Image (cartoon, rainbow, N blue to C red; front, side):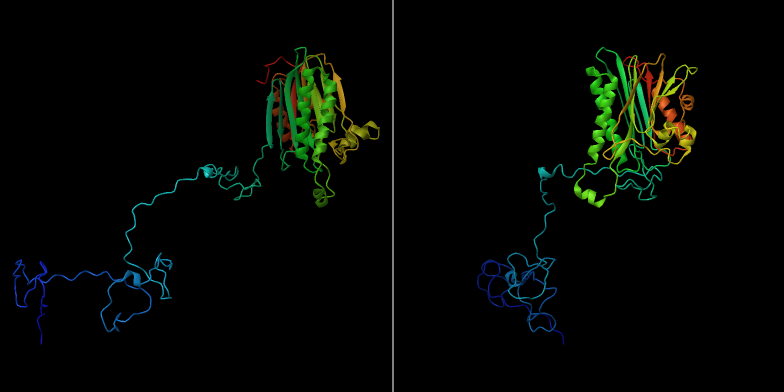
Length: 429
């Protein structure tokens, strides 16, 4: 049978705490309605998600859950680490507290360390392949997508300085450009102009030939441009420039002993050199190796000339009368050089020569990458544009194109100087 819930007897008035009788409906002291039963205080128990059951917990318990006692239960964070001040004395499993204080809406950010302000500089944008336009270029200069070798800075170089200009190109067969050049212009003590060009060809059978040609051309060019304004005769200055260039190449061979142990049979860095100095009335050339200088007059009715003699096996055969020039240069040993700049050179013998042309023209200073396709003076004259003296940069480009059209089997470098040296301010059109 059903029973109505019985109201608990009140011993004191909940309003004024005065004693009341069990049958009273109102407090005799304050008039409070005693029939209204106050709601029990709300409890916030701590519920253990995992842990050891305690008496009275769960369906098997024999009593009501005990009142909430924060200090009586260990609390942990989401990682299982005991909260500060609640380290358990015994292992009771991990627990989660539901009565944590509310978290703030915003967290204060720590000010950046000024010492590290410049440390996080943005990285350089990745270089994109020039062939596929999609792949990233690695540190070795190859595309990670298609494997294409990327152009190097020295693969094609053009430079103009006053009246003189030069162009250097890697060619179509070599993987790098081992040629180098230097051009410049200055004023002699008497106020007349002078133009300078140096061209070097790295010896491929040596180590670091590209470094050798670059060092030699820079030092030789700087030496000439420093000596000529002091009044040094151009031919003497040329000799000094070649000696200085040789010393610069020799210095490249001064490696630690450990490096030689790993590669004991490698040749020292080496290169050839050819240079020209043009003034208002004098033309001076100097060379070691098989790079050449040619004279090409403006009047194509006048004869052109080759101004240098190769330090090569073919030249020795011709000089000794053992072969004709055609036979010697057709031999596979023709380009074996007998003179070069480098620590393992037999003996340094700089060649210099001076000329006083009686008419205007242009001087072509080049490596064998060009003269292989225009060997004789007449062939070179045909390849040089008629306006070479007034447009030296354009003419150098044309001559490099002539070599590339012929096959481009080698690096090709060409410098063009007008004779006589024009006044300051003149240049290519």
